[in-house]
Length: 242
Image (cartoon, rainbow, N blue to C red):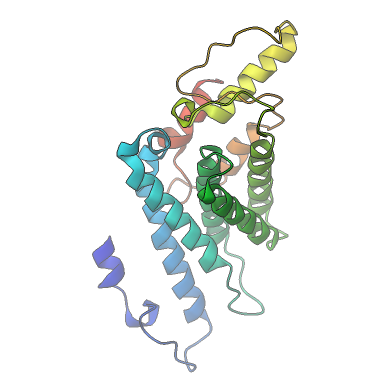
């Protein structure tokens, strides 16, 4: 893939080739789309290992490559090339995927971590980008999803919740927390002094207000070649709930 991107591109699509003012307007748009598509493919290659990368240093490269590609997608899409750009849903899907990738990374970092603040700001940039496509249902749902992720992460204030090490976090954390919170509300019998058994694969925040159906709505909007594959990545999220 690297060879195709570096050596197999037509000259007019390569960012190493200066833009010619006589080129038609669509060339600049195509160059950007080609570039974000390349970064998106990096995320797709690593998606099967992304959940493990939050727990095991063995998969640290996957975490680094995926978050780096996600930032590049958001950076590329932040540039307005023309006054009347076409709204391509595939670009919106790329931004949502990038935001999810960085949002999950934020969930697995402590507040003092410098990368926590940086990656959180990138998710916020992704939300602003999605708001730019006001007439897109996909962009609207994606912005809602990313906003919900940040809102849930913001609830984890120091001292307000039980501190759990990153070893107890996994890709099922959000959905598992939803399931446990709903069960607790239904039974209304949890003692504030009771000792809770912590699953080694999940993080259990309280008072979750996040709707898991949003995940399904957004991901069902993507064909498999564009969005994160539910079977290999988001399957972990829904296994505990369904």
